[in-house]
Image (cartoon, rainbow, N blue to C red; front, side, top):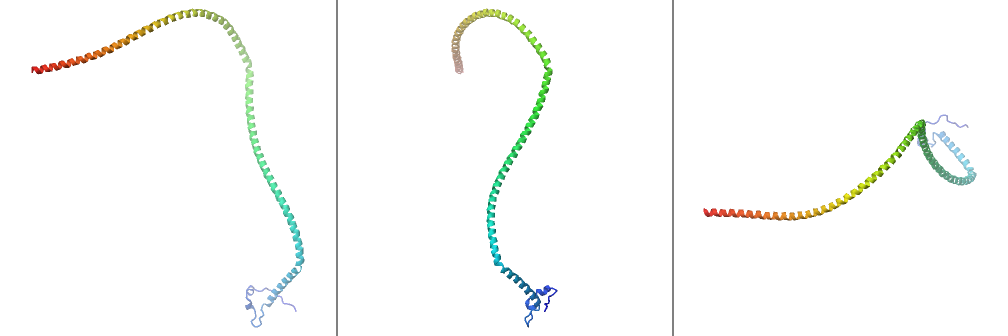
Length: 256
């Protein structure tokens, strides 16, 4: 007997209905028995697949354990290789860092070298300019050399003439100095004599000054004494005048 297979799926509203609503209350059979059969068939098929899967699970487990052992060995080898590679990577990183520092230092040295090169180039340019200036000056000097030589020759001739004149003048000056020396010695001797006479007169004058100083001191003492006597005379004169005034006053009083 062929089984009826529904063509259209159940509506969503019927699927959401509870089992109490779809079951016959007299016989307890669901009105949606075909749908339940379909669900049961799907569950049976799934269970058959699971049974088949579990039938070969022991063999698969052995195979998987062997694979697991192989994989664990491979993993250990890979971990050892990875550790060695990590160490190698660390070494390479350190080497790379060292090389980077070396490259940085080389770049700095290269920059300093470029700066020094620029400075040297500028200095060379300045040297070239100064060299050109010196060449120009030397050309002018070489062009002026004949004129300078002529001037030097004229100057030498003038110097030789001046030397000849100086030699002749030197002899004349020597004779004049000799005569002046003789006259000067005579004048010096006469001056020495006059100096001796002046010293004698100075000594005499000093003695006279000392004598006059003594006289002046005596005169000063006498002047002081005279001033004192004058003061006394004035005081006596004043007293006499006062006494005369007093006597005249007494006489007037007696007359009255």
